[in-house]
Length: 116
Image 1 (cartoon, helix red, strand yellow):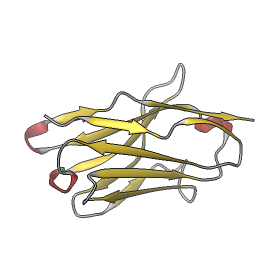
Image 2: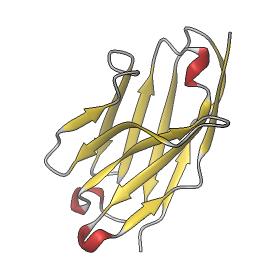
Image 3: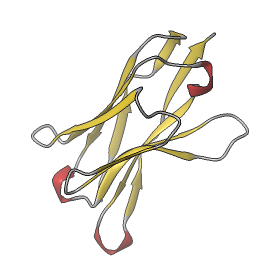
Image 4: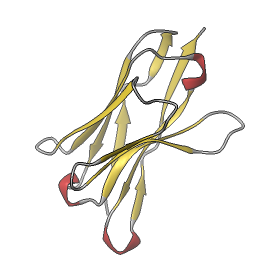
């Protein structure tokens, strides 16, 4: 069982920056994927960015060039640096991980609110 705890959300003006952190109770280098999803009010949860065990990264087209995912294996933590934030980035951001045998884990979510 892996527990994921997000932090770093908050209120920011458009054009500003935030950095989200996801601390894992398990060793993240052993996970197949770990990353971020988000869900805005009235919308489906969507992929933001994920990083695979081999270090390859997949970003949503809507955040390319603005958001950067990274990981620190020693701290078992994944980060999402969010720059040039837009009003439409407002959502609850969830940390998500996939392990072997189909196991999936979600964090409790952290609210990001961008004021226009």
